[in-house]
Image (cartoon, rainbow, N blue to C red):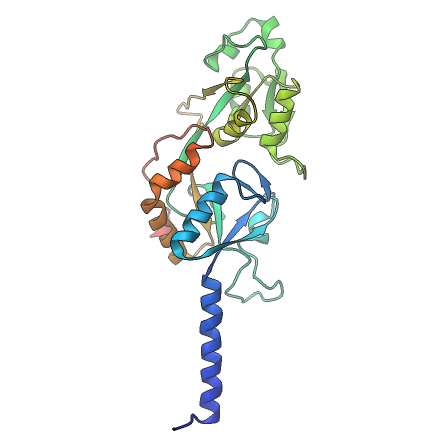
Length: 289
């Protein structure tokens, strides 16, 4: 039997090792996620983003691997765009490859096709004197004495706060931070606790978060009233998945899964009790061409 020259055998071993390493890496569906962010993701993996990640990994014959980090300022820099080895700035491997939920067209990532669209809602605790409210516009028309009795959460930013400002309700808003830095509660968890404690009676909240709040209480504890978009104020937003800018192959693979598994994705999200709206036609970003 012929034997390979020593240098040829050496390079063959390196080649086989590279193939083996690559195959191992591709067996993982590497997700960047917040460990305490219901209803999206948790370390218990019971959020809808966790379940969609599991669905996709199964279809690809992979296993999900998480890089956990609170979703605050610097999240993308320290997860999606962070080399696997901190000192290896030229590495082709990163801590994680997919963020399961970002706004469609998000500037800090390359985004997939949208896979769901929801809306902000006015969420009102029942039995506290506000059961006659069936449209957010009614709050702006309440008599002054009744307006002054409102206990409505108001975030530091977002369309709900803009709406309150336009309708003269800022003075009755109870302030909340969109990113609190609380290690024990995300925004939805804090709102849920404060509604139960009667610190607030209502809130204009993003649909999935409102769905989480509703799910923590007995049925019919809340009224969920969709906010109405106007030409100068948008409440409905499409959500996509985010990958590194330039990672077009991964985006295309995810786009195919989003299209092929649309029914299963929607079935997963249907269990989280939030408004699911028809998806809009995708606006193609210039760098997607």
